[in-house]
Amino acid sequence: MIVTRLGKVHLAEVKLRYYVSMCMNFVLTIRRVHINQGQFPLTQNVTVVEGGTAILTCRVDQNDNTSLQWSNPAQQTLYFDDKKALRDNRIELVRASWHELSISVSDVSLSDEGQYTCSLFTMPVKTSKAYLTVLGVPEKPQISGFSSPVMEGDLMQLTCKTSGSKPAADIRWFKNDKEIKVKAPCLLDMRGDMSDGCCIYVSVACGTEKSLNINHDIQLLNIYLYTPSVKIIPSTPFPQEGQPLILTCESKGKPLPEPVLWTKDGGELPDPDRMVVSGRELNILFLNKTDNGTYRCEATNTIGQSSAEYVLIVHDPNALAGQTGPDHALIGGIVAVVVFVTLCSIFLLGRYLARHKGTYLTNEAKGAEDAPDADTAIINAEGSQVNAEEKKEYFI
Image: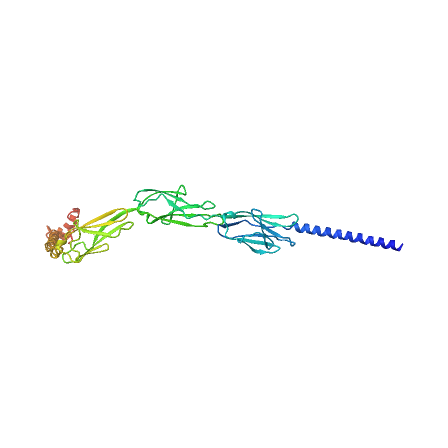
Protein backbone atom coordinates (compact mmCIF):
# COMPACT_ATOMS: atom_id res chain seq x y z
CA MET A 1 0.00 0.00 0.00
CA ILE A 2 2.80 2.41 0.91
CA VAL A 3 4.65 1.68 -2.34
CA THR A 4 1.52 2.28 -4.33
CA ARG A 5 0.92 5.62 -2.68
CA LEU A 6 4.49 6.72 -3.29
CA GLY A 7 4.16 5.81 -6.96
CA LYS A 8 1.03 7.87 -7.31
CA VAL A 9 2.66 10.90 -5.66
CA HIS A 10 5.69 10.64 -7.96
CA LEU A 11 3.46 10.38 -10.99
CA ALA A 12 1.50 13.45 -9.93
CA GLU A 13 4.74 15.39 -9.41
CA VAL A 14 5.99 14.46 -12.89
CA LYS A 15 2.72 15.54 -14.45
CA LEU A 16 2.87 18.83 -12.55
CA ARG A 17 6.39 19.53 -13.76
CA TYR A 18 5.32 18.73 -17.29
CA TYR A 19 2.40 21.12 -17.17
CA VAL A 20 4.56 23.86 -15.66
CA SER A 21 7.18 23.34 -18.36
CA MET A 22 4.50 23.53 -21.06
CA CYS A 23 3.15 26.74 -19.60
CA MET A 24 6.59 28.31 -19.47
CA ASN A 25 7.34 27.30 -23.05
CA PHE A 26 4.03 28.77 -24.13
CA VAL A 27 4.81 32.03 -22.38
CA LEU A 28 8.30 32.18 -23.94
CA THR A 29 6.84 31.45 -27.35
CA ILE A 30 4.28 34.22 -26.97
CA ARG A 31 7.03 36.61 -25.83
CA ARG A 32 9.29 35.65 -28.74
CA VAL A 33 6.45 36.13 -31.22
CA HIS A 34 5.81 39.56 -29.74
CA ILE A 35 9.49 40.48 -30.00
CA ASN A 36 9.76 39.16 -33.57
CA GLN A 37 6.85 41.33 -34.60
CA GLY A 38 8.97 44.39 -33.66
CA GLN A 39 12.07 43.09 -35.49
CA PHE A 40 12.54 44.27 -39.05
CA PRO A 41 15.74 45.21 -40.93
CA LEU A 42 15.94 48.77 -42.30
CA THR A 43 18.10 49.78 -45.31
CA GLN A 44 18.51 52.73 -47.71
CA ASN A 45 19.33 53.00 -51.41
CA VAL A 46 22.84 54.22 -52.21
CA THR A 47 24.20 56.27 -55.17
CA VAL A 48 27.92 56.43 -55.85
CA VAL A 49 30.20 57.58 -58.68
CA GLU A 50 32.13 54.93 -60.55
CA GLY A 51 35.43 54.40 -58.76
CA GLY A 52 34.07 55.64 -55.43
CA THR A 53 33.11 53.83 -52.21
CA ALA A 54 29.58 52.69 -51.29
CA ILE A 55 28.47 52.14 -47.67
CA LEU A 56 25.64 49.62 -47.17
CA THR A 57 23.96 49.81 -43.74
CA CYS A 58 21.32 47.50 -42.22
CA ARG A 59 19.75 48.42 -38.85
CA VAL A 60 17.33 46.63 -36.48
CA ASP A 61 15.67 48.57 -33.67
CA GLN A 62 14.80 45.46 -31.58
CA ASN A 63 16.92 42.33 -31.77
CA ASP A 64 17.16 39.30 -29.46
CA ASN A 65 20.64 38.31 -30.63
CA THR A 66 19.37 37.29 -34.07
CA SER A 67 22.00 37.22 -36.83
CA LEU A 68 22.21 39.71 -39.72
CA GLN A 69 23.51 39.04 -43.21
CA TRP A 70 24.34 41.06 -46.38
CA SER A 71 24.19 39.44 -49.84
CA ASN A 72 24.88 40.86 -53.33
CA PRO A 73 22.57 40.93 -56.39
CA ALA A 74 23.79 37.39 -57.27
CA GLN A 75 22.58 36.25 -53.80
CA GLN A 76 26.16 35.60 -52.68
CA THR A 77 26.67 36.17 -48.96
CA LEU A 78 29.05 39.05 -48.33
CA TYR A 79 29.00 39.17 -44.50
CA PHE A 80 27.25 37.03 -41.87
CA ASP A 81 27.35 39.11 -38.70
CA ASP A 82 31.05 40.01 -38.41
CA LYS A 83 32.28 37.10 -40.52
CA LYS A 84 33.34 37.74 -44.12
CA ALA A 85 31.90 35.19 -46.53
CA LEU A 86 33.00 36.38 -50.01
CA ARG A 87 36.64 36.76 -50.98
CA ASP A 88 36.65 40.26 -52.41
CA ASN A 89 39.28 42.70 -51.14
CA ARG A 90 37.03 45.65 -52.03
CA ILE A 91 34.43 44.60 -49.44
CA GLU A 92 35.19 45.48 -45.81
CA LEU A 93 33.34 45.44 -42.49
CA VAL A 94 32.44 48.87 -41.14
CA ARG A 95 30.37 47.99 -38.05
CA ALA A 96 28.78 44.79 -36.66
CA SER A 97 26.45 44.55 -33.64
CA TRP A 98 23.06 43.08 -32.73
CA HIS A 99 21.43 46.25 -34.03
CA GLU A 100 23.55 47.09 -37.10
CA LEU A 101 25.58 45.50 -39.86
CA SER A 102 27.42 47.97 -42.16
CA ILE A 103 29.85 47.10 -44.94
CA SER A 104 31.77 49.13 -47.56
CA VAL A 105 32.42 48.40 -51.23
CA SER A 106 35.39 50.37 -52.62
CA ASP A 107 36.43 51.05 -56.21
CA VAL A 108 32.85 50.58 -57.35
CA SER A 109 32.29 49.64 -61.01
CA LEU A 110 29.17 49.62 -63.18
CA SER A 111 28.93 45.83 -62.67
CA ASP A 112 28.38 46.35 -58.92
CA GLU A 113 25.08 48.09 -59.56
CA GLY A 114 22.01 46.17 -58.43
CA GLN A 115 19.82 45.14 -55.51
CA TYR A 116 21.54 44.12 -52.26
CA THR A 117 19.68 42.20 -49.52
CA CYS A 118 19.91 42.41 -45.73
CA SER A 119 18.48 39.33 -43.96
CA LEU A 120 17.39 39.04 -40.30
CA PHE A 121 17.28 35.35 -39.31
CA THR A 122 14.05 35.27 -37.35
CA MET A 123 11.26 32.73 -37.85
CA PRO A 124 10.46 33.41 -40.60
CA VAL A 125 13.48 35.22 -42.06
CA LYS A 126 12.87 38.91 -42.71
CA THR A 127 14.66 40.86 -45.48
CA SER A 128 15.12 44.42 -46.68
CA LYS A 129 16.41 45.57 -50.10
CA ALA A 130 18.88 48.36 -50.91
CA TYR A 131 19.55 49.37 -54.51
CA LEU A 132 23.08 50.49 -55.39
CA THR A 133 23.18 52.98 -58.28
CA VAL A 134 26.55 53.57 -59.95
CA LEU A 135 27.02 56.77 -61.99
CA GLY A 136 29.31 56.48 -65.00
CA VAL A 137 31.87 59.30 -65.40
CA PRO A 138 31.69 60.85 -68.89
CA GLU A 139 34.86 60.76 -70.93
CA LYS A 140 36.49 63.97 -72.11
CA PRO A 141 34.32 65.42 -74.89
CA GLN A 142 35.60 65.54 -78.44
CA ILE A 143 34.66 68.38 -80.79
CA SER A 144 34.59 67.67 -84.50
CA GLY A 145 33.57 69.61 -87.60
CA PHE A 146 36.11 72.39 -87.05
CA SER A 147 38.75 73.18 -89.63
CA SER A 148 41.28 75.94 -89.17
CA PRO A 149 41.36 78.72 -90.15
CA VAL A 150 37.83 80.11 -89.85
CA MET A 151 37.25 83.33 -91.72
CA GLU A 152 34.88 85.97 -90.44
CA GLY A 153 31.36 85.11 -91.63
CA ASP A 154 32.14 81.44 -92.28
CA LEU A 155 29.48 78.94 -91.15
CA MET A 156 30.67 76.36 -88.63
CA GLN A 157 28.82 73.20 -87.62
CA LEU A 158 30.45 71.65 -84.58
CA THR A 159 29.62 68.27 -83.08
CA CYS A 160 30.35 67.09 -79.52
CA LYS A 161 30.80 63.40 -78.74
CA THR A 162 31.27 61.84 -75.33
CA SER A 163 30.81 58.33 -73.90
CA GLY A 164 30.86 56.43 -70.61
CA SER A 165 28.24 58.60 -68.95
CA LYS A 166 25.50 57.04 -66.80
CA PRO A 167 22.93 58.52 -66.75
CA ALA A 168 23.09 60.44 -70.03
CA ALA A 169 25.48 63.39 -69.88
CA ASP A 170 24.28 66.98 -69.84
CA ILE A 171 26.11 68.69 -72.73
CA ARG A 172 26.36 72.48 -72.80
CA TRP A 173 28.16 74.84 -75.20
CA PHE A 174 29.93 78.01 -74.13
CA LYS A 175 31.50 80.96 -75.95
CA ASN A 176 33.79 83.22 -73.88
CA ASP A 177 32.28 81.82 -70.65
CA LYS A 178 28.71 82.54 -71.82
CA GLU A 179 26.39 79.63 -72.49
CA ILE A 180 25.09 79.20 -76.03
CA LYS A 181 21.54 77.94 -76.42
CA VAL A 182 21.32 75.15 -79.00
CA LYS A 183 18.46 73.09 -80.39
CA ALA A 184 20.33 69.79 -80.20
CA PRO A 185 22.81 69.34 -77.32
CA CYS A 186 25.43 67.61 -79.48
CA LEU A 187 25.32 70.09 -82.38
CA LEU A 188 26.31 73.76 -82.62
CA ASP A 189 25.77 75.97 -85.69
CA MET A 190 27.45 79.39 -85.68
CA ARG A 191 29.18 81.91 -87.92
CA GLY A 192 32.62 83.32 -87.33
CA ASP A 193 32.43 86.79 -85.87
CA MET A 194 35.26 89.21 -85.08
CA SER A 195 33.70 89.79 -81.64
CA ASP A 196 33.85 86.09 -80.74
CA GLY A 197 37.20 86.56 -79.02
CA CYS A 198 39.27 83.61 -77.97
CA CYS A 199 37.51 80.31 -77.80
CA ILE A 200 34.55 77.94 -77.96
CA TYR A 201 34.33 75.07 -75.51
CA VAL A 202 31.89 72.41 -74.39
CA SER A 203 31.05 71.36 -70.85
CA VAL A 204 29.90 67.83 -70.08
CA ALA A 205 28.39 66.83 -66.72
CA CYS A 206 26.32 63.97 -65.36
CA GLY A 207 24.47 63.48 -62.11
CA THR A 208 21.17 62.83 -60.34
CA GLU A 209 18.69 65.03 -58.55
CA LYS A 210 20.68 64.62 -55.32
CA SER A 211 24.14 64.70 -56.86
CA LEU A 212 24.71 67.11 -59.75
CA ASN A 213 27.90 67.99 -61.62
CA ILE A 214 29.60 64.74 -60.77
CA ASN A 215 32.19 65.41 -63.42
CA HIS A 216 33.01 68.44 -65.49
CA ASP A 217 35.29 68.34 -68.52
CA ILE A 218 36.19 71.18 -70.89
CA GLN A 219 37.55 70.99 -74.42
CA LEU A 220 39.11 74.28 -75.51
CA LEU A 221 38.86 75.27 -79.15
CA ASN A 222 40.79 78.29 -80.45
CA ILE A 223 39.17 80.06 -83.38
CA TYR A 224 41.14 82.30 -85.76
CA LEU A 225 38.54 84.64 -87.09
CA TYR A 226 39.89 87.43 -89.28
CA THR A 227 42.76 88.86 -91.25
CA PRO A 228 44.77 91.75 -89.79
CA SER A 229 43.61 95.36 -89.83
CA VAL A 230 46.48 97.89 -90.07
CA LYS A 231 46.81 101.62 -89.34
CA ILE A 232 49.94 103.86 -89.29
CA ILE A 233 50.11 106.53 -86.58
CA PRO A 234 52.82 109.29 -86.84
CA SER A 235 54.37 110.80 -83.73
CA THR A 236 53.74 114.34 -85.06
CA PRO A 237 51.26 115.78 -87.59
CA PHE A 238 53.90 118.16 -89.12
CA PRO A 239 57.23 116.36 -89.63
CA GLN A 240 60.05 118.93 -89.83
CA GLU A 241 63.49 118.67 -91.29
CA GLY A 242 66.14 117.82 -88.69
CA GLN A 243 63.64 116.42 -86.17
CA PRO A 244 62.97 112.72 -85.35
CA LEU A 245 59.82 110.90 -86.47
CA ILE A 246 58.27 107.66 -85.19
CA LEU A 247 55.73 105.78 -87.31
CA THR A 248 53.74 103.17 -85.35
CA CYS A 249 52.09 100.31 -87.23
CA GLU A 250 48.96 99.48 -85.22
CA SER A 251 47.68 96.06 -86.28
CA LYS A 252 44.88 93.83 -85.01
CA GLY A 253 43.90 90.30 -85.97
CA LYS A 254 43.16 86.78 -84.80
CA PRO A 255 45.80 85.60 -84.23
CA LEU A 256 47.76 88.78 -83.58
CA PRO A 257 50.12 89.45 -86.52
CA GLU A 258 53.78 89.45 -85.53
CA PRO A 259 56.09 90.95 -86.72
CA VAL A 260 55.35 93.70 -89.26
CA LEU A 261 57.28 94.63 -92.44
CA TRP A 262 58.23 98.23 -93.33
CA THR A 263 58.98 99.40 -96.90
CA LYS A 264 59.45 102.76 -98.65
CA ASP A 265 58.20 103.44 -102.16
CA GLY A 266 57.81 99.71 -102.79
CA GLY A 267 61.34 98.79 -101.76
CA GLU A 268 63.55 98.36 -98.71
CA LEU A 269 64.30 101.21 -96.33
CA PRO A 270 67.10 103.25 -97.97
CA ASP A 271 69.04 104.23 -94.85
CA PRO A 272 69.03 101.44 -92.19
CA ASP A 273 71.44 103.38 -89.97
CA ARG A 274 69.06 106.31 -89.71
CA MET A 275 65.80 104.37 -90.11
CA VAL A 276 65.55 101.87 -87.23
CA VAL A 277 62.73 99.29 -86.99
CA SER A 278 61.83 98.25 -83.44
CA GLY A 279 58.87 95.89 -83.20
CA ARG A 280 55.97 97.74 -84.78
CA GLU A 281 57.72 101.12 -84.87
CA LEU A 282 59.80 102.77 -87.58
CA ASN A 283 62.07 105.36 -85.97
CA ILE A 284 63.66 107.94 -88.31
CA LEU A 285 66.34 109.57 -86.18
CA PHE A 286 66.41 112.92 -88.06
CA LEU A 287 64.45 113.91 -91.13
CA ASN A 288 65.65 115.44 -94.38
CA LYS A 289 64.05 116.13 -97.76
CA THR A 290 65.19 112.77 -99.16
CA ASP A 291 62.87 111.00 -96.70
CA ASN A 292 59.81 112.20 -98.59
CA GLY A 293 57.83 109.28 -100.00
CA THR A 294 55.26 106.56 -99.31
CA TYR A 295 55.91 104.28 -96.33
CA ARG A 296 54.11 100.96 -96.18
CA CYS A 297 53.46 98.65 -93.21
CA GLU A 298 52.46 95.03 -93.87
CA ALA A 299 50.99 92.69 -91.23
CA THR A 300 50.44 88.96 -91.73
CA ASN A 301 48.83 86.17 -89.70
CA THR A 302 47.71 82.64 -90.53
CA ILE A 303 44.52 83.98 -92.11
CA GLY A 304 45.92 86.53 -94.52
CA GLN A 305 47.78 89.81 -95.05
CA SER A 306 46.88 93.48 -94.79
CA SER A 307 48.78 96.77 -95.15
CA ALA A 308 48.55 100.53 -94.67
CA GLU A 309 50.43 103.47 -96.27
CA TYR A 310 51.64 106.83 -95.01
CA VAL A 311 52.82 109.65 -97.27
CA LEU A 312 55.67 111.55 -95.61
CA ILE A 313 56.27 115.19 -96.51
CA VAL A 314 59.18 116.76 -94.65
CA HIS A 315 58.51 120.48 -94.02
CA ASP A 316 61.00 123.34 -93.83
CA PRO A 317 61.02 124.65 -90.22
CA ASN A 318 61.38 128.28 -91.44
CA ALA A 319 58.44 127.97 -93.81
CA LEU A 320 56.33 126.44 -91.10
CA ALA A 321 57.27 129.26 -88.75
CA GLY A 322 56.20 131.85 -91.36
CA GLN A 323 52.97 130.04 -91.97
CA THR A 324 52.17 129.66 -88.35
CA GLY A 325 53.24 133.28 -87.31
CA PRO A 326 50.70 136.09 -86.63
CA ASP A 327 48.97 137.71 -89.66
CA HIS A 328 49.57 141.45 -89.04
CA ALA A 329 47.46 142.54 -92.02
CA LEU A 330 44.48 140.64 -90.66
CA ILE A 331 44.94 142.10 -87.21
CA GLY A 332 45.22 145.63 -88.69
CA GLY A 333 42.03 145.17 -90.67
CA ILE A 334 40.11 144.04 -87.59
CA VAL A 335 41.33 147.08 -85.62
CA ALA A 336 40.31 149.45 -88.45
CA VAL A 337 36.80 148.02 -88.54
CA VAL A 338 36.42 148.37 -84.79
CA VAL A 339 37.56 152.05 -84.93
CA PHE A 340 35.22 152.82 -87.83
CA VAL A 341 32.21 151.30 -86.08
CA THR A 342 33.04 153.26 -82.93
CA LEU A 343 33.27 156.61 -84.80
CA CYS A 344 29.99 155.99 -86.60
CA SER A 345 28.27 155.27 -83.30
CA ILE A 346 29.57 158.54 -81.80
CA PHE A 347 28.47 160.55 -84.87
CA LEU A 348 24.92 159.14 -84.85
CA LEU A 349 24.56 159.76 -81.14
CA GLY A 350 25.64 163.40 -81.59
CA ARG A 351 23.11 164.03 -84.34
CA TYR A 352 20.34 162.57 -82.22
CA LEU A 353 21.14 164.88 -79.32
CA ALA A 354 21.35 167.94 -81.59
CA ARG A 355 17.94 167.34 -83.17
CA HIS A 356 16.12 167.15 -79.81
CA LYS A 357 17.91 169.94 -77.97
CA GLY A 358 15.62 172.94 -79.06
CA THR A 359 12.26 171.25 -78.81
CA TYR A 360 11.86 171.80 -75.08
CA LEU A 361 9.04 174.33 -74.51
CA THR A 362 7.12 174.85 -71.30
CA ASN A 363 3.50 175.95 -71.19
CA GLU A 364 4.52 179.32 -69.88
CA ALA A 365 6.97 179.96 -72.69
CA LYS A 366 4.49 178.84 -75.33
CA GLY A 367 1.88 181.31 -74.06
CA ALA A 368 4.35 184.18 -73.79
CA GLU A 369 5.29 184.18 -77.47
CA ASP A 370 2.41 186.54 -78.48
CA ALA A 371 1.48 188.09 -75.04
CA PRO A 372 2.35 191.72 -74.16
CA ASP A 373 2.62 191.01 -70.47
CA ALA A 374 2.90 188.17 -67.99
CA ASP A 375 -0.80 187.95 -67.10
CA THR A 376 -1.78 187.73 -70.73
CA ALA A 377 0.89 185.04 -71.26
CA ILE A 378 -0.58 182.93 -68.47
CA ILE A 379 -4.08 183.32 -69.89
CA ASN A 380 -2.85 182.41 -73.37
CA ALA A 381 -1.05 179.39 -71.97
CA GLU A 382 -4.21 178.10 -70.28
CA GLY A 383 -6.19 178.61 -73.45
CA SER A 384 -3.74 176.72 -75.52
CA GLN A 385 -4.22 173.43 -73.58
CA VAL A 386 -6.81 172.36 -76.14
CA ASN A 387 -3.98 171.73 -78.56
CA ALA A 388 -2.45 168.43 -77.35
CA GLU A 389 0.44 168.60 -79.72
CA GLU A 390 1.66 171.93 -78.36
CA LYS A 391 1.48 170.77 -74.72
CA LYS A 392 4.33 168.31 -75.16
CA GLU A 393 7.45 168.79 -73.17
CA TYR A 394 10.70 167.37 -74.47
CA PHE A 395 13.43 166.30 -72.13
CA ILE A 396 17.02 165.63 -73.00
